[in-house]
Amino acid sequence: MHVVVVHWNQPVRLRATLAALADQGVAVRALVVDNGSAAAELDAARAVVASAPIDARLFEAGTNTGFGPGANIGLRVWLAEGVGEWAAVVPHDALPDPGALAALIAMAAAQHHVGLACADVGDGETPVVDPYFGGMTVPARVAAGWEPADYPHGTLLLARRACLEAIGLFDERYFAYCEEADLGVRARAAGWQVGLARGVRVTNPTMRSGSPVVDYLMHRNTLLLVREHSGAYHAAIRLIIAVFQLVRGVVQPSSRAWLFSATGRLAGIVDHLRGRYGPPPPWLLREASGPEPAVGAAADQVPASVG
Image 1 (cartoon, helix red, strand yellow):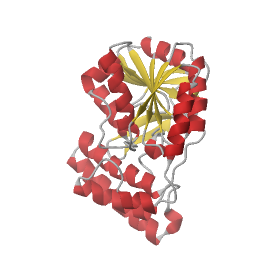
Image 2 (image 1 turned 90 degrees about the horizontal axis):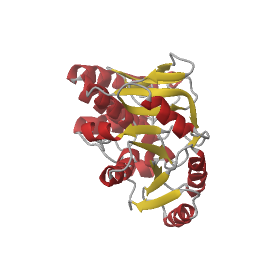
Image 3 (image 1 turned 60 degrees about the vertical axis):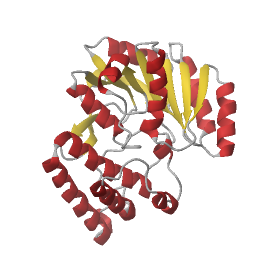
Image 4 (image 1 turned 180 degrees about the vertical axis):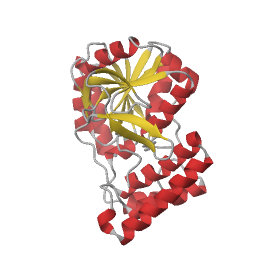
């Protein structure tokens, strides 16, 4: 089975992920897409891939393309090779439980016309898309088994060949965050079922968030998602809410959500209005205290409705 691993500057975590993929109940062929890692980390990633306990290859993108575009590189290879009904996408620090991938495939295949599915990250939440707030989560509706969802999260995402051939790959305007929500909306609109395999666990132990870059991407991309799939009216309301939350957070710090950066939010709103998508602006990356793993490689798990 083809598994795309999106990597950026974390060869030690990549080693653990490739080791976990060796115990999945299915034969895995991993394509590691390196998203422009620094020279030392890239050299280490080459060594990790060469010594992996599974069939693994390395594709060097040469630049930080973002999570969705990086995943697209590996998915295009899979589609062109024409082998296998299912492919999976994981970030460099995803640790699926033993047999999780086989269980996820079996559960998805047992349902009717499933195009996209994901494993359970253990948060007790289900991904949904709100017409005003975009991608977010709500409390789980089932304790175990298959659960319909609006979109799959990217910590362990399973995609059916026929679905991707029908709807296309990740929209690369998003770069990172909200791209799974967009893909799920498109799949469901085309008649495919999307769901989560409750109890089939994967962990993402090193995920962080909270930088100006993350807040930038979350707000810019949420506005794009709402406009694209809910229309101009809903997007205008979401824009008003975003501006209100930004101003309130600046003048009343106690009102801030756990994820708040005035600089990042303002830049995200402005770039949405300008129609500027893709990678975050270089000046914002320079201002951030440190690049987030999620920007280059990790999964989209942060609710888009953060205040």
